[in-house]
Image 1 (tube, rainbow, N blue to C red):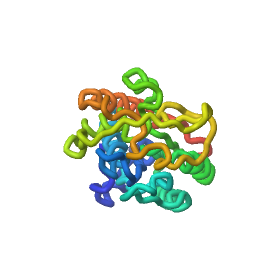
Image 2 (cartoon, helix red, strand yellow; image 1 turned 120 degrees about the vertical axis):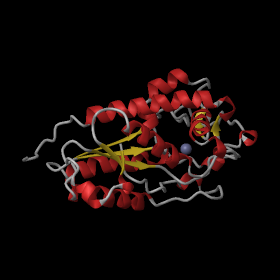
Image 3 (cartoon, rainbow, N blue to C red; image 1 turned 60 degrees about the vertical axis):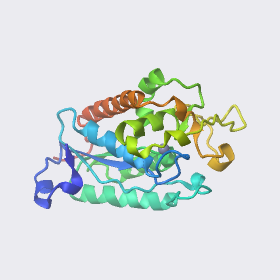
Image 4 (cartoon, rainbow, N blue to C red; image 1 turned 90 degrees about the horizontal axis):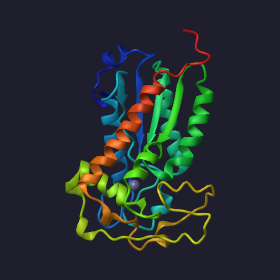
Length: 261
Ligand SMILES: [Zn+2]
């Protein structure tokens, strides 16, 4: 496993262009309830990416995440910072285009923030099309990838995993326990007002609409952080890491249609 920012330019030059998988983590800087840090999503997806990159046989380099994401729905809470969706698209695109210019052929955008979902869906298609014949570009959200394993581990009812919830709180208790103020954690099972809408992390509503988090929860927490423990966090972390490692192992073998060498 390599941390891209720690490599020298000659070390990058020596990497195998066909075999090396580059992972770009994307997260957010936004409120995570009264008990968790603003950087939760980026911290988590970076940790999961680094751990997953250390498994398996493919050479994997994890890029430094750009920290910020699309967080317009959190802006009524102090500390939240949002890029415009088009800014996030442009930043991510510029990073990926730079990597393709250096000849890399397997680039994975690993997302850790639900609000970035629409942007990465578009990017995977748009960049994949533009660089067809040069590189494969994949995008995923790590907790969606590990959905089944997380569902099997969860203790909360639907709605208990949404934001700064059972899942995210346990994960931060596992990787950075010093950053969790459990005495300030408050549960909220939000009611988005229609059976067509869900705020659950694993809910997967078919309908998309704007939900302002300050309307859903007075603390910004969606779900039940009181169910989180460091032990559960270790299990969630392992589920997320093994799912991502398995994907990388598969992705490194994807054919590169249209390539000439
Ligand atoms: Zn989060």
